[in-house]
Image 1 (cartoon, helix red, strand yellow):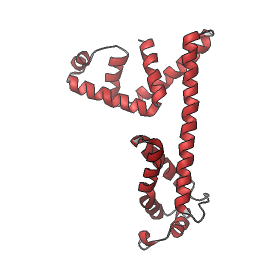
Image 2 (cartoon, one colour):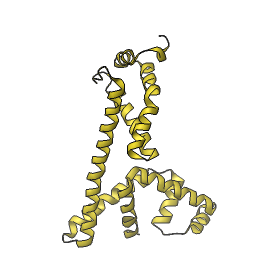
Image 3 (cartoon, one colour):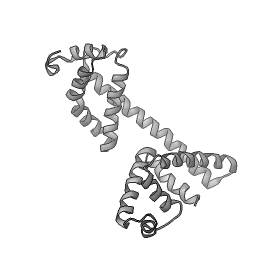
Image 4 (tube, helix red, strand yellow):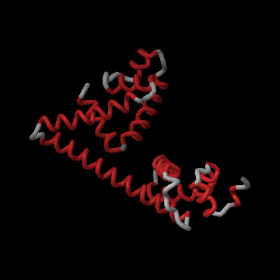
Length: 196
């Protein structure tokens, strides 16, 4: 249907609304770096910046038939990035308050059952993400954090090198930090060591 790079933003938006994947790809390629830069200035975290931009484009494709972009595509995209950023901040605030309540209960614990319920919920969330790790990585993580074995002991059990074990642990921690978020990730250390 011609060279999409020569189309105007308005033409691309019209094609997008009709489900044209090539038009969507052109919009993505045309604005991804600008939006990445815009998001980076707000977040200063490479992975979170990539996730934010990806979420915006995923939303646009999912709602392509109903979204009202108007005559200014770039302005619309910048607004989406700002809104997505604010949503993520709001989500973190809610999550942080939840974790803060867990910490306060652990310090005062006037209602033991409520504290245990909250801790069990956190444990279930952590266990779910651990279970989603690749098999070898999960095994290394569990031997280290739940059995409290050293890298050397784990290497002997698994028939591998200490360096490999160290790398697997590094990858596991990176994945869990991304999945759980920093506050939950730090709280997981308390929970995991509280439940040997």
